[in-house]
Amino acid sequence: MAIRSLLITNHLRNNSYCCKLQFEARNLVQFLLPISKPSMKLKYIHDNSSSSSRLETEILRLKSPSRALQNWANNGNKVKLSQLNVISKQLLKSRRYKQALEILQWMENQNDFRLTPGHHALMMELIVKVNGLNRAGEYFERISGSASKKSASLPLLHGYVKERDIVKAESFMIKLSSSGLLVTPHPYNEMMKLYMALSLYEKVPLVIAEMKRNKLCRNVLSYNLWMGAFGEVFEVAKAEMVYMEMVSDENVEVGWSTLASLANVYIKAGFVDKALLVLKDAEMKLSSNGRLGYFFLITLYSSLKNKEGVLRLWEASKAAGGRIPCADYMCVISCLVKAGDLVAAERVFAEWETNCSRYDIRVSNVLLGAYVRNGLMKKAESFHLHTVERGGCPNYKTWEILMEGWVKSQKMDKAIDAMRKAFSVLKLERCDWRPSHSILMAIAEHFEKHGNFEDANHYIKAVHGLGVATLPLYKLLLRMSLKAQRPACDILKMMEKDRIELDDETSALAAFNS
Image (cartoon, rainbow, N blue to C red; front, side, top):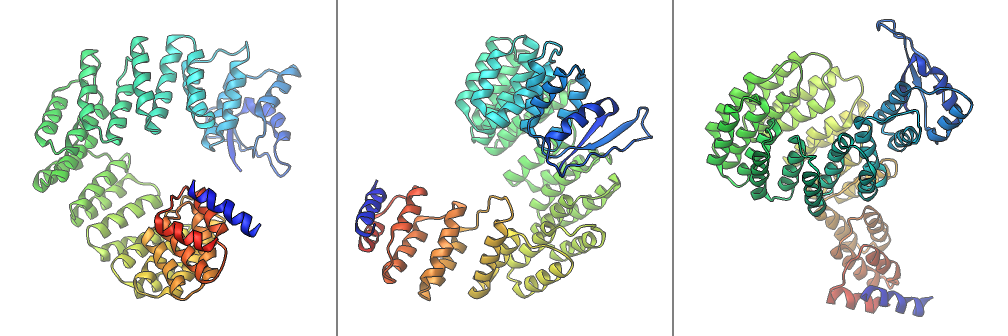
């Protein structure tokens, strides 16, 4: 590789989580406790409102539950299946997947326990998460019993779909079909999701045809995906035929989600009046038992720039009762901004700010971004100061938004300061930051314009650390290093690590810097 040869030449020339356990699990939990960190505390809370006493326990950072369980059993103590089910569920809730998998594997190796198909499905899901799809496929081959294989097949297929591995997914479906394990619509729905994700919309009707050949009923999701596939290629008449077929299907009930799918087909095709009529029907299907449907429809109304629909459903969603989560406020503020009603978005934000128990900067970021995109930088700066005064803690996204605004308004000193603060925050947060290339280049070009090689070098190293450095950025740094008479060895190493291919200009710059 060109970079490697340049590097060699250069070298020669230069040289806490919580678990809820039933009362019977108390002694087992106390036994597991010593393998955790010393700072861990055990707390019991009795729930007198339930028919049986319950307790809540905090177990932090279990290192090896399987070893502890084996020691417990070796000491002559009994372990009940119900105990392990409760513990593994709580580990899952706190995303302790490796520890939950250890418990299930320990159960599988004991003669006293007989794993149910549900256990095998959960085991498969955890193996996919912890050990990857290859190990999960190997485990599937070892499962005996058609019921367990059927239950475990869906998490494995879902894993292939999530990775968009069409070859393995289709091969696995053939295997399931030949084994007689395709008896529900769920695997077919997974395949339709995969084809939709890969824009292979023409394959979705083929899946439906296979379901019909196998005399399998379609469920609501099947119809929604089928309809959506036609919508993506603007086959409105065919999508309407799917809807009519669903209406005549006695096995399913047309609800808000199907009507929302049909409305989305109309929106994509530009049939605004039809979309509004269907959305009105969808509103009639909503239930006050949950808010999910309201926000699906709110999003569709916003895409039509229909702020009245957004506000009407926002107010109606409050009938569901309970605390309104920050995510819902973020959604409606974003939708009002998209619908062009910044004033209404500000009112909803003020409502959230009045009722919030903890200042979530993500909510204010939505409004901050709207100000910046609309060129209201003075308002954005004032709003940013307000959120900090109210206790908001700026995250990397806050600084990215401000950085973008200051770059556009040519306030480069402020943009660079925001960039540095964003990098500082990233050291503390786990996130996948992908700032726009144009903003990254604008800051780099500012350093080049002022001949500030050291700052440019530190900056591009940080960008390299994010995995978003590009050839134009490296080319700029090579130009600056040549002008500053600095060696290009470190720059070439970063380029090699990022697998950046040299063009003629970059090769010449690197050669001059050697």
